[in-house]
Length: 580
Image (cartoon, rainbow, N blue to C red; front, side):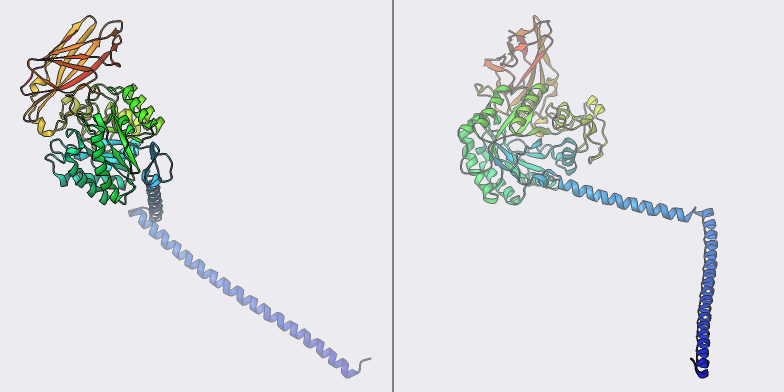
């Protein structure tokens, strides 16, 4: 039971509670009202500002459209362009980096010799497939980075052989500027190194016959080069190109045993390639008595496919079977003179044999010299970025051997953009200044001919040529066979006259002819300097040419080519030719 005072207090408490609740509600409503009002005001302000900005932008756009077009669109286009350029730059940078990572040297590193072939830094078998320059004293223009890159990227090569002649006019040891020639070699090494390619420094003996003739020069040269490139992973050394003229293997070996330690003193792991007798054909002789006491020594085999066939391949196979490493630093698919017709069937046999045995090789030669073995057409003046139309038959063949599409070359590689028209130049006879230098490479493999001494014609010799004799020819016919002879070149070294003759026998009959003999009758006594694709017998003023095993039989409608270079103390007319 509540007393009156207690009832009054209770009623007052209830009323106070209601008042407090009412007050709280009022306060909450006030706060809500103010918040809505503030938001509305802000929204109105933003709308007004936006409206004003839109109006301003529309006015500006309207104005800009009358003058420079839509500014926003231009900005977007510029942004897209910048992005595209940045993406392109990134891709180019990535591609460049990827390209550098994939260069031959970057992938395979320093090479060494294991058993009979080269191996890379990982110990895996590695085959060099390269190109040899012609003599850099006559064709220095082909020592250029763009040309090397064209051959690497378009042709698929991984090595350049830099051929520095030693005993010809303007060569290193006979009248050439040594410092300039060394500079060319160094430039070639630098370009190859920048492109991640292997490079062979070739001491290109030829007319000196025996490498011992300029041995001291060779020692000094290789001492300088091997010291300079001691830390390079891509440099190989070829210390004597083609010993010839009766030089024995023991003479070559003696020379090698003095030059090799000079190189090894600076680079104990250097790969050194040693030439072999008879224009580097007798690699089997080296196999019987190899150089001892050094690692990474290889031995040279050279061939010209239309002249050097099974008999020389058998020498290579014999050397490999004996366990010595073989390197073909120079070859061609024509005959041993560097001219004549290409024999791609024999060339393919050689490539197959070398590929099967892991033998590395470099083809001869990077130049536009007017001869069959040149890889560039004589009318082409480009020094890089060559297309199929710029290449000789041998050049096209070699690119196909390396597995490249010859129709695609020259589209993306560097080009010197030389203004030239190959076909017109060839039709007009506009050949280079050195086109008439005879590439007298390896000659008759028949050792019984002691007078077969190599000779290299030079730019100086060209000045003394008698062009009048070049057009003269002689021919004769017997039965279905027709023989012709043509003087294709003539030069002088100051004391002797040299004549190059091309001889061809054609079978015009409907059946094969087995066996033939050709007689050449000169007006005076002559000496054979070189000969190829036949056995040559001299008697007085006459020369008899007899067949060798591979051209004794002439099929119906077919022909055989042979040739020789003679030297004499007097001017000489083209000889009479007859079949016997």
